[in-house]
Length: 312
Length: 294
Image 1 (cartoon, chains in turn yellow, blue):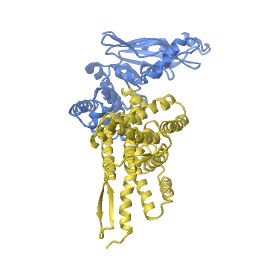
Image 2 (cartoon, rainbow over the protein chains, first blue to last red; image 1 turned 90 degrees about the horizontal axis):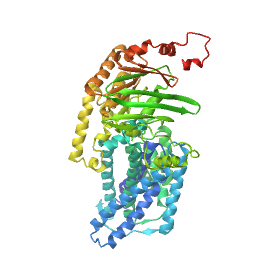
Image 3 (cartoon, chains in turn purple, cyan; image 1 turned 135 degrees about the vertical axis):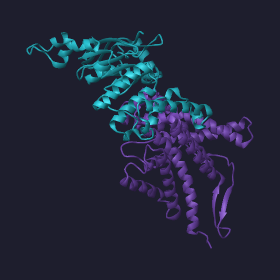
Image 4 (tube, chains in turn purple, red; image 1 turned 135 degrees about the horizontal axis):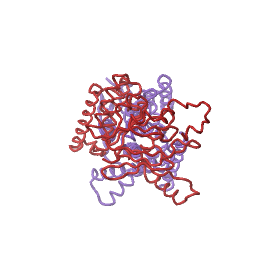
């Protein structure tokens, strides 16, 4: 029925790969889109936060092992929580140190500050951890396979990839509850629409802005941990490319919109992997960015972005 | 019942412009007090000082609440050369404390604006829920996991939001985005939202602007009701004399940043200085400076 290299099999496999890649882009893009929504700046240091979370994850997993936690799920859980918290702290500090003092100045000032922060974080990791590519151990190996017709024809998804999709879905649900169904989320949306008025309602808008950075960083940390798990290698420079791609995803989906960021991420991931699988690997980025340009020509505010007014 | 607000010798200078010049007055608790004056008299500037947006160059504004005094104004940082220690103190305070505006809300001061500033993309009820931010459980984790305590506090907030919607006759707007409401409804919703913050003192900046006669009558009833039933002190800026003269207990008249008259509506109406400020000089050849001294 199916032959080796059947386009349908490749299509199915690339759809899965694209979904996984897209989930990661989407998770990182949330940080860009939330920060833009609330204070109207692009946090270029966000990609580095993602990179740092990879390092933190590996370091703390090793430390937890060193302290004699032998059960893998327990060790992972502890590491997960610690990494989330510390990455959140990084996000908080970046805002406090590099952006808050510049609030009220021209739009360009925090942008330059963000680029500076990105370089600082990158070089901090380069100096403290070295330039070598770090290797992460293999945990939870295994694949789910659906064969079609013959034994050599199959679509597969590794346990870790399945976990990526699962964790992304859970994170998105939690974020959705937070933004749409809790007072903190209401405060976020109010701050986004009219910061002064939110202040007058007794909302400490500085805290809300800090919270946005912490949530963004935590989402990037989730992505960083999942990617480390999946690719098992990372270096100090991974934040740059991932940051650019996620930023693209945020713009594609409509910057300022959280569902837009997720949708943009998935579209970008799917576009990339489908083009790579079915047409040409070398030009996948050209296709992805070409898609961005096309969308922006017809919808300058992105797919889910609203003209003039932004929604979180 | 004692004063709720004591404004003492408040001056504020924007570059060369003296927007407020030693403004002093008191406001009794559970009074409706109007601030009137020609355009550019400094009324809105005074409101901005009251709510913490502007720091007066000199003077103080004290809010009295439950027998305690709270300063609504922080002295500005001043110049480094004149007073290095004071400057450092101000600098450190600015570094370690976040901006103070939300604190005036915590002290029970609420305000509305001349131009409507609702959260346009939130529904009516959400606007009122946001206003209760400080009285609800807004912990991150209890919100995500929807704990029973959290749900209880949400339910209470929702009840209170409904109370104020009904009070203003806005039940139908609960699930409509505020930006899509008619102008009159938006004005009422803004007042409802200000009330949902549980204020002791509410500052209304031209609440009657753009309303028709019937709506103004409704507004008057509502404001009087707030004072009588809800024990709220109302400070309002208004140009519409039908509102000012009918419901105010006291009126303060500002002109060129100075208080030129104060008293009951009847007293103020007869005050020649007020008439002069509104209608101009009688002697055409008088030098312009003498207007201020008059």
